[in-house]
Length: 375
Image: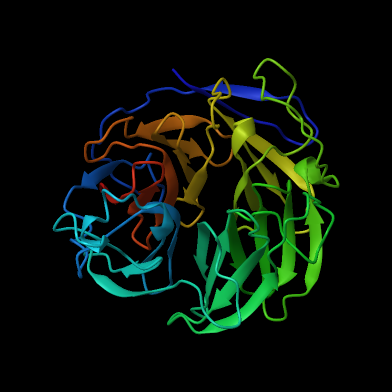
């Protein structure tokens, strides 16, 4: 059995024991408007083969837009010579060439468009990481390579619009607002015209900017306190919960009821805040996990109340299904491995409008997969 928990502010930690974890995908109906625990089945034929003899690299980021298109931000610079045999001089093998960083698919797995890479007037990241498509079809991109202290805003055809921050070799400083700290991901609050940034692999904070003007609005660290860049040392599951985020602060998402969820990956937890940064609660997922942590990314379920969180865990290489209200683990999908439906360093997860999941892997995984919601 696996454990998860929730910490209301400032109540004591509650630890819930997962019951009935599903190691295989089975069909479960959603009845009377109340969702049962969602179950998923891998689609081994998604996506279709890329054109132009292209190959996909590590998947830094994924997003789903309002048209139900799946956006992938991948890392061509980390392709190996063996993978790019056709691109060598002279060619060493029949395949392949590096695909562009940004790839857009439909639900059937067809590649719709591709673009990305260095250009005039902006600093393309050294290592692609996060991607988000807002309600105006603008595309936001972040990086987590050396000197990636900024995010970029484009039109959905790749036309550059705005840059927040700039490349820098300066040390971490989570109180600075002119640069970021290897930002991992972001999400736009369309109504407020604000962008929330999970910042990041160097800084230890959530920071918010005006999504039209790029001006600073506010920031906070763990528990809503001012962020602290002091190295807290290695995570110890037997110790009290850390009073600051550990690197990386890996994701940020906003629920329909206006709460801000933040992936504190190395602390095996997700912290929840108001939009103004007031701490609400925290959820723990398999808190005995060491290595690279258990909460890498997540998607909300698509029922009206977003009853579940689908959490991608790249250390244990499963997708955990959590109840959003109390953090209880009620299911899991996948297993460490290379077969369809298994994972190696599952790094990203998104949901389309029908509730199907899409995942992306880093390290040597270098693939995306589709998991169909079973009704």
